[in-house]
Length: 142
Image (cartoon, rainbow, N blue to C red; front, top):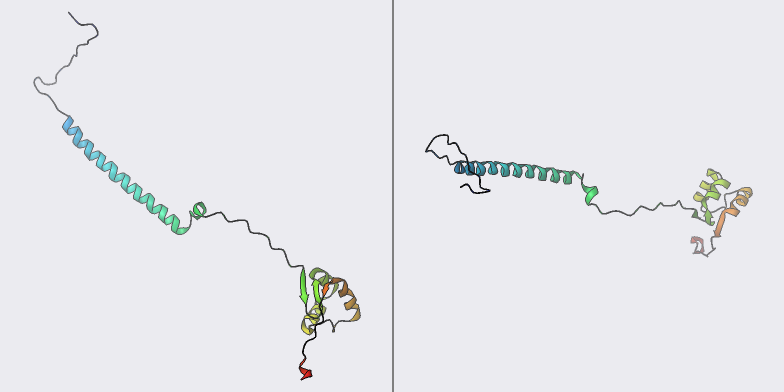
């Protein structure tokens, strides 16, 4: 009596009495193919490593690894300067009030003595702090 739920295998042997064992051949080819696969991935890994090293040498990846720098502050131009013989003056005011020749006279002479009365009157509103008159030893006192 046939059992319920069991199936009979119908196998047709290719050659009667000859069994083929493919497991040995499959294991050998499996080892061979896995060796080729691993060697291939080692070569790919070495290539990728060389690309990364070359990129680091060229600085291509420095943006990824660099520390973020704080934003540089804008330097503001100087608004006041010390003129010899006059004191602290507003630069923009002096440039508007006097000509370049007059400013050069002040710098060469070291005082405002070479200026005309009109130039001196234009220069007065630009003075922020007058230079203190300190007695200095002159070479003629020896």
